[in-house]
Image (cartoon, rainbow, N blue to C red; front, side, top):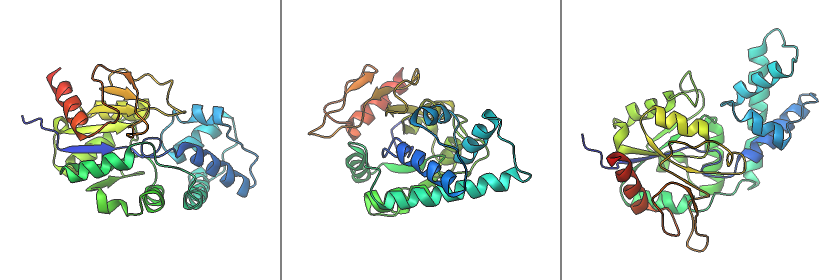
Length: 255
């Protein structure tokens, strides 16, 4: 089977931009607007990030804290999460979540090199659109062939379902794709779909176990802000570029 690198599959939150802190603040704003005395501190949110999906995270918190569930808990959670999304989109419009180093550079290089691109995320489509509108100045469909977001599949990361969905939509085998993630849940989802993965850590994921990653770095790097290899044997230059990803992908396929 041809294993030439054909596509890059990008997670969003924490991978493309430092959005997790904005998400945390948006949750708290939604709780306050709903008259709830819940407050998710950075430490609490770090724990809750082990649960993928916003509505799932709220449900987990309620069960964990022994909060009495309303009669129609699904509707309650959906309304609360929709409010949180509204707050998040408004915060993104204020420019609160900068792109991570090297992200826009790498995406533009990949497009110029003819690589196919996809978004693979558990965040809602509205959140994805807000990021691309306010950080890239484009609609995500302009750059990405497939945008798989939110509840498009029943099981969220670390289940491989959303990656399998993207592979099917693109008509590509896992061996011709490479994933970029920031968390253990995301990496494990990609690996379970048979897709080799590069990880860039952030403040909420730098303690995760990334066993199995092709490489782990602090970020993708810019010429004036070189990246640092934290785990792996193939050293990039000052930046992660298309050439490095092709070499890393080839090394994974040969292993």
